[in-house]
Length: 172
Image (cartoon, rainbow, N blue to C red; front, side, top):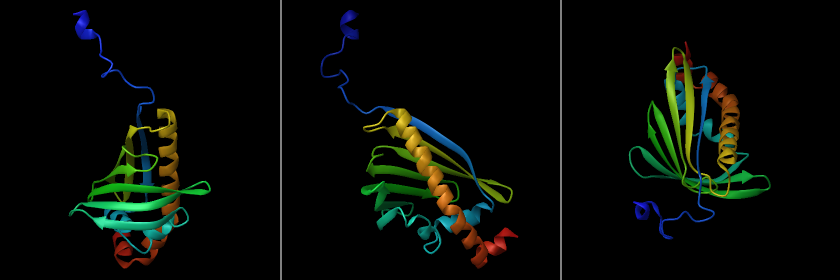
């Protein structure tokens, strides 16, 4: 029995291996029906402008009917980090982002969209390795990133809802 419990050097965890982190952020609310929120997320005019201060060289390549490969650079302080992710979208319920390169490479984020009457609630769940950071740093970084994206989206979402004919008719 003791021999089975002993690990060989090949199965011993190596120093510096990635730790795993889980983080969630529940309750972001858009004051509009689910369909209007999804129309905004898919809009190339309004939604794409929300993050232009911190995102550049954005490229998108369709992989399938529901999956897209996204490549871009994201500002982190005074430098730009290359990011690549696969986004799988199952409208109107969920988006799944798999980070393939960048500081969160290997992690997965799930955005769950839920209709609550005339409002839409978005709950976000992140899971993955915290490469070069502690799980607490991973969680804090993700929460800050999601909060910033939400605050950047809101003014453009309001413009979209005010100016987009299909959004205006759905908001009534």
